[in-house]
View 1 (tube, rainbow, N blue to C red):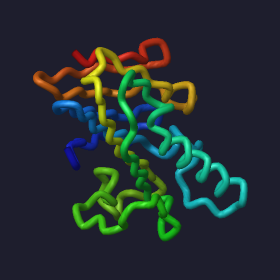
View 2 (view 1 turned 45 degrees about the vertical axis):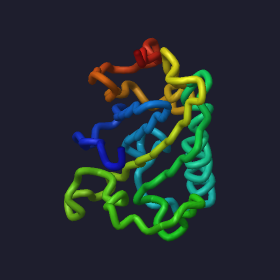
View 3 (view 1 turned 90 degrees about the vertical axis):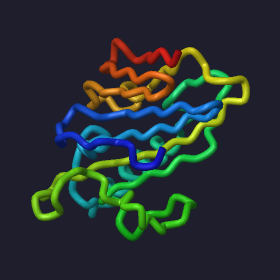
View 4 (view 1 turned 30 degrees about the vertical axis):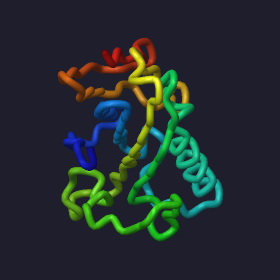
Length: 171
């Protein structure tokens, strides 16, 4: 399920969540402008900004808290962003020859101060795929207004998540 996000325009307040379901596995990719998660998009230089970035990365890695999937365990989470640079250390190999560091769909010259986060989650569901997924993305990141969610399973569905609508039916 690597790389199945089709990046849309970089729009503050909006993000994408793609969910692929196969057998007892759920792969998710969450893509968002850094502004939604951090409140800024520049390379952090102050201690306060660096601390805020570290806190956001920690929160993003905790997929089991951001997504409630009854009976499923988070097996892997990988956070990528232009803002992480050389300090990028998520416990995984940094050999991203598959282009995972090309996070935004932007041409590098046009990118300016636009920075994005791309987070990959892999859940294993011992008891089968749950009927619903509930997300706490909106309470964790209050600047987030809506998330376009695409679910790929036996059929494809797309919906817009918001603070009021934070549940996805998976079956």
